[in-house]
Length: 262
Image (cartoon, rainbow, N blue to C red; front, side, top):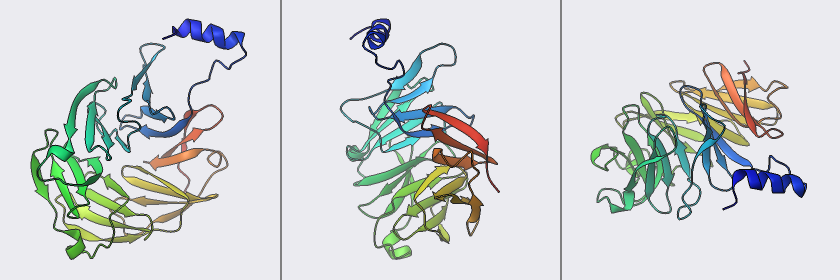
């Protein structure tokens, strides 16, 4: 491997930009405002505030994680559904542990995953259409009813979100949310407007379409319309919560924080 200083010198010699890092494909904001970037080379990185280098995690055998959950920055969850693998990282993105969901007798086809409010893990099992709550060792704690029977599901959800006292399934094609208590009891549906992109930042699901946007806050029965400010219109992967919004600036490849439009 070429040392960092030598690589930088070669880049300058041959006219390559010193900022030739892979692009950002998404970013995540933890509860204290720290930013984590997922790059096109499948690396998850975050700044080391005590030095010039970055913390990073990458596993060539797994590729890019489908789910990155930074709800607990001391116990970050990466989920690779094709392999049924959950990787748990600490705040320096060093690996703490792994859990093979395919090895668990009570989970057969895990497709979605999110951290619960009490530091457990919610999993959606597409085999029996149940929400299942487990701990980091895979021990089952509770599960919902078969959602095909309870709420007449015809297809599995696309995303799973968890707030303090709610579990939410997002169906992109149907443009709606199924909302459950943190015990897995169904409480109702929420309809969503048409959207080009959306991001979850607990407790807000933020969607955008051109210069228009909407925000759904956990606990509400309907979404609230928004108009993107000029400062936000060029930002990508918008997230919003608690009166603030975050978006990726394509020019600098860094996240900017701004005020959430009303």
